[in-house]
Image (cartoon, rainbow, N blue to C red):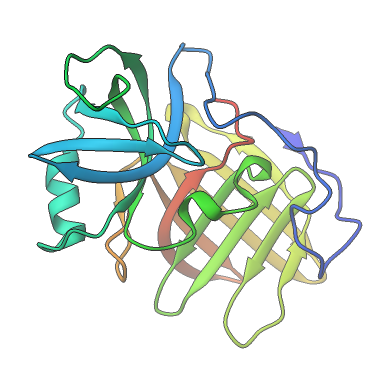
Amino acid sequence: MRLVRPLLYCLLSLFAGCQSLASEDQVPADGQTRLRGELSMRDGDLLLRPCDEQRRFMLADADDLGLAEDIRALQGGGKDPLFADLGGKFGSSDKSGVDGRFEATRLYRLELGGQGCKDPDFHRMILRAAGNEPFWSVGVGGKGLLLQRPGQPPLALPYLEEQLPGGSLNLTSEANGRRLELWVAPQRCVDSMSGAVRHLSAELRLDGQVQRGCAYFGGAREE
């Protein structure tokens, strides 16, 4: 179990001032690369252009992730580019006009719209979870977590993290008379409003009330 020290600030950005981490291509212990970028289609082939780059890679669903079905569901027949956050390995391709091949073996998230490559907090973020009806969002950084809900001031709290069997996490906080628990499990999750796909399911328990949603690891999480 890990104790995260109390926040020294509340209303400033949760992630401001944290150490900037990693380049875009991150290489976890299993040798795979995490790659974020814009996903599009050309002549029936999926192309992935990494964030802040001009290179394009043929995208292959190397682990039967169901990417084609998810893309069709999100685009709904349209041609707007999608944002993809994937884990996998680079390879070569004999296709012209591309810079290689990316074999995806893990889906972190897939979405239409949103901040995508422009998210300034990604590399400093450990975890982000959110749900709907009513909307809630929890951002987790190295110095604490930040709960946001419409019509209410942001709630910044320290937390305890417990890693559970099977890759699940439990984050708990008790401060100022409030008790918060965030349970996260490695389970495919689809946002009920946007249709965005996440690799983690989430359950927020706040003062006895339970709300469900989806979550994903940020760039500061070492797996």
